[in-house]
Amino acid sequence: MTGTNHIAGGLVFTGIFASFWDVNIFSDYYYLGMCVFGSLLPDIDHTKTVLGKMFYPLAKWLDRNYGHRTITHSLVFLIVVVSISCFIESSFSDDFTFSIIIFFSVFSHFVLDMVTVQGIPLLYPFKRNPCVIPGNPQSRIRTNDKRAESIAFFLFAVIGLSCQSLFANGFWTSYNRSFGTITHAF
Image (cartoon, rainbow, N blue to C red; front, side, top):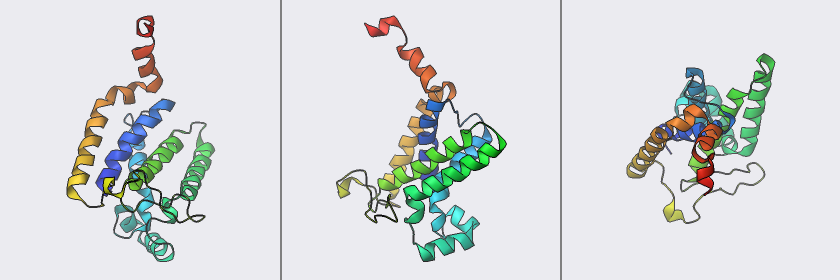
């Protein structure tokens, strides 16, 4: 996936799953910024990405020692990043909103990279096998395939626009408004 689709997919994925905790990522610019940052964070191991250019010495070191899509695309990385986020956030407040956003945005990057032909080694450094979502390699997306990337971006845009009330009200409020009546039971 390209950076644009990681951002669009990360916003939709994080928006939907954060709504379970009544976190509206579209309510604050800090939340949006954190979501975009988290959606791009695993690609810090590649020197030609946005974050790789911003943190070039770290990106070069990660690329030289581990390579692209290894340690920064693993559950170990996710646990470390979320733990650091929780530690920092617990020092300043009792609210873990940013940690929730970081978790889902980084995880969205993993899910979107699992849909590509290469997949990601989710259990790295313990196992180097790539994890992929569709088992059939012909069903996976090739990175930089303009047609597939455009279709994915269009789908993210449509899903994001259709879920605006979910983002604004939270999952449980939306659920109760839709299914909380006795007429729905019949």
